[in-house]
Image (cartoon, rainbow, N blue to C red; front, side, top):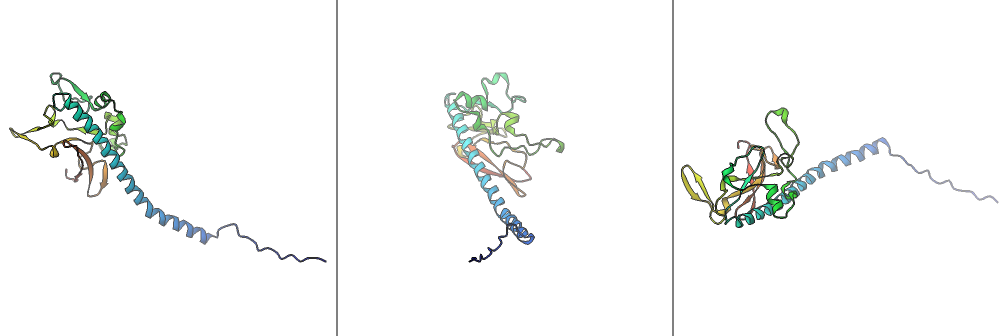
Length: 208
């Protein structure tokens, strides 16, 4: 006696063209939703890392000042184009200063550090300030030699004491009107270390 076998239904192993197009459309739609979110998340992560770097460098500078009779040290941002003279005494670069305090030069590198422009448009490049100058951050020399406790500023033939919360010591390198963080049509933002130990955001307009 023969047993009849019911044929198994055939299984389909390939997508139809319509199904494939639907899958591609769904993936494209999801990409448009997640890419801006991931970019914003990356910007925030860069800002946090940058702010942490600035705090560490700021502590190093404050410590160096305490070892210098409470005076802010002389720091050269660009040794290839120095602003200090031999009579200024000991002059540091930021890499020299952080290494002298046992820190790594890695704290001088901001993850958002990319040169936007320099000179003629044909000179635009992706090289970072860290690659060029050894630091993503710029020291503000206005307060060199001033007391940490009461820094003074010379403006229009007068001297005034500036509150530490308004004394900018370190900041992101930034082109005019364009800073490393939060680039947009309305402007961009850089981070600044102030003498009171805070790191705050400073927004730039295109006119600056």
